[in-house]
Amino acid sequence: MEQDVLLEVKNVTKEFPGVTALSDVSIKIKRGEIHGLCGENGAGKSTLMKILCGVYPHGSYSGDIIYNGKVLRLGAGSIHQAIEEGIAIVYQELTLIPLMTVGENIFLGKEPRTGVGIDWNKLYSDTDELLKRYKLPVSPHEVVKNLGVGQMQMTEIAKALSEKADVLILDEPTSALSEAEVDKLMEILATLKSLGVTCIYISHKLEEFFRITDTVSVLRDGKVVTTLPTKDTSLEKLVQLMVGREMKERFPKGNRKPGEVFFTVEGLRALDPNDPSREIVKGASFELRKGEILGIAGLMGSGRTELVTTIFGEYGILTGGKITLDGQEIKIGSAREAMSHGISLVPEDRKRQGLVLIQTILQNISLPNLDRFSGFMRINGSAEIAEAEKFSKSLSIKAPSVHVAAESLSGGNQQKVVISKWLMSEPRILILDDPTRGIDVGAKFEIYKLINQLAEAGYSIIMISSELEEVLGMADRVMVMWEGRSNGTLDIAQATQEKVMARATGIEIA
Image 1 (cartoon, rainbow, N blue to C red):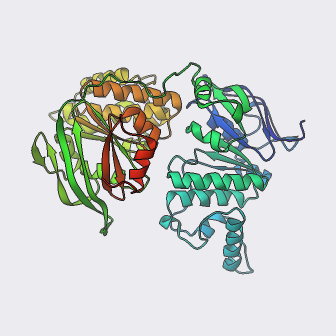
Image 2 (cartoon, rainbow, N blue to C red):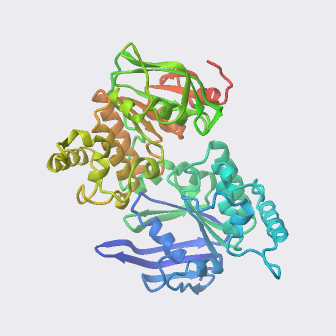
Image 3 (cartoon, rainbow, N blue to C red):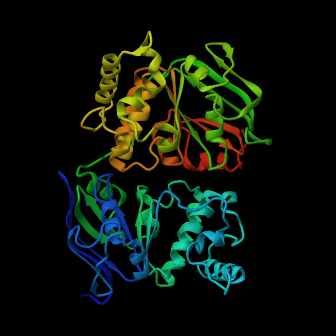
């Protein structure tokens, strides 16, 4: 075995009933490197990680995992065995206990003991030493619920490193982080690398591979397409390798012809319903035209989501400003009232806010639209099925039928289900809050095409994205949020990353 190879996946095949998730996969991961792993949803990344972490034990797959020169034989239910071997994972969905401190979370289940109980002084001193060693900017005594998402991510990393992990697997670590938090994470990964920790880095944000990884492996349909030094490839080449076809344009060009302004928001102000002393929207204004895509950009915490959920009647306590539709001022106090005015919202967290995962595609699509199918004490089931199947077909939802559970779908198809249920409500305005978050590059392209088609069909789209390139690639105009207020709107012909970021950081005031 090569001396500098720490972990080798050798001819691994993993099958489920009727599906081959991994087919003869071989990857070599060098000691002390950051190894990127990319591929579309369903490519086999998660299955491979579950094998490495012991979710799928040795014997449930063919081939071998060779670690430190020996075949790794993890038994059933052997996640703790993998950790003892030095392999730890930080999942996309955080697993911290909100009401416990950082120190309590990091040493949960392995607290240092005195003769009669927990040695709290040692627990917090060990936590402090660990955080300082890896340059993690978190306080040991801080209660987790008071942390930002980025600090929670740092705590998860510290928890994994407390097990003395030699291999740290990071699954979509930046999906909910701000740009500043992403920059900090990149610094931390560089520190880990300098201390000899080997990282496997999984992300749908392909540009991140070029910031931090040494090597990248591409999976497609359960097979390894290639493994190569990151410096020897490009963003366009990675996309082509992942989807198996050349994608000349990341953002498909639409053929939109926006009409007149019909919807305006003027000087909107709102309070946080959980803390009425805090103002979350501090004066936001914009206009929306028929058949256009209006992008809303801004840093995390700028008030983008708070603005649109307030417009949808489901968050902020309105204290000022007005909303006008077709020249008439309207009041919106609930989602039902918003829908009555032709406004629908696809939320940023589709799993928690957009779907009932254990219910079927049919049930999810029809849920906010049941009044369309209800008669005297009964639902017209055949009409409900026909309508759901129409949307499933028109949006190309990949599923055996509308009767399968939403949780069985890929991220891209789940998002299409959420969009379908709101399209069924026949909106004039469709608000999309980070519509491609956590979706692979091929599915993103499908969502982009769908958004274009909707705008061309006359829908007016308000699109928030945490990816600035996405806003600039899709929108007709860009409104920028800064500290809870709107800070200018740019036509796309004049919008550049520099101009948008200047407004997003308050440098240019509208």
